[in-house]
Image (cartoon, rainbow, N blue to C red; front, top):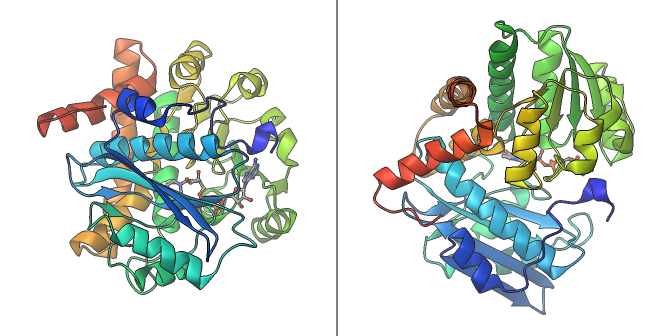
Length: 362
Ligand SMILES: NC(=O)c1ccc[n+]([C@@H]2O[C@H](COP(=O)([O-])OP(=O)(O)OC[C@H]3O[C@@H](n4cnc5c(N)ncnc54)[C@H](O)[C@@H]3O)[C@@H](O)[C@H]2O)c1
């Protein structure tokens, strides 16, 4: 796996329990099934606000320690995402170690569903990278603690993309006093589920789009459909752009890439975009780049999942995702006044809600 495909920081988890203690996790569940080849990890970070909800990612991690660190970071991010979005949900996430193109089977997902079910509703799963609604249908045969099923709230990606689009407009408003994205040069990294819908919104608004994806077929197809300029994955950071929208995997805001990036706004769907939150969050501020904190801007998906858990309508989800605009405006307003990086303000706002509910272990 080269640097550009890295999904987690290079930090390894040598002592999982110690890391859980440091990051405030409640539970880490390792799942193994020789018959189906399932190797999965479920991480429950915090259930103060409600059951831990977060998607399942299927990824061919190079090392087991990478998978552990990824699921720990992703589940913690879910706690913060749900808190800042005012949802009565805790933070959790799961990873299945394997190639999503070759290793999927009904048996594997059903076995995974049994593991989810063994947690008795403390963890509710959904889709994430490498997983589609049909996979979740298999999971649902073994547990009711799954959302994002076809015919129910469905694929959360359109709502996620809409929220990212709204958040991006908020960044433009904060920078230029005008939230139009017309004629702005926007580089979208990853045109999968979310990236593609985002490209659709941005095209409709008249942005100038540069897109990339490691899957050449997807890249060509999306470029053709929307008239976007296809860029090789390794060249995306060098594009002369106004906005960088990371919509692939995390940790792309690192020393190497920040050297190359020339944008004034970073607003995208990927989770855990900052490789080292403190260091790279500060670096972005020092460089004068407006950064929409990932867990605040990409909350549309979990909003969509929450609508299913709580019996709310699709319109409610859309409306709630639109509120991401105001959330980002508020984060950037406070960051400017206090002269601190935006990620810190977003963390404070989420922690404040957790504190109000009685306990914070993060
Ligand atoms: N799906 C949602 O509703 C949702 C919600 C919140 C956050 N997210 C996050 O947004 C991101 C995208 O999610 P998705 O559902 O669209 O996933 P996806 O798997 O459908 O799409 C990701 C795309 O990125 C491409 N990609 C991977 N590595 C790349 C690289 N180095 N350079 C260029 N392209 C690369 C993949 O080929 C794929 O097409 C993820 O980080 C996910 O965790 C998704």
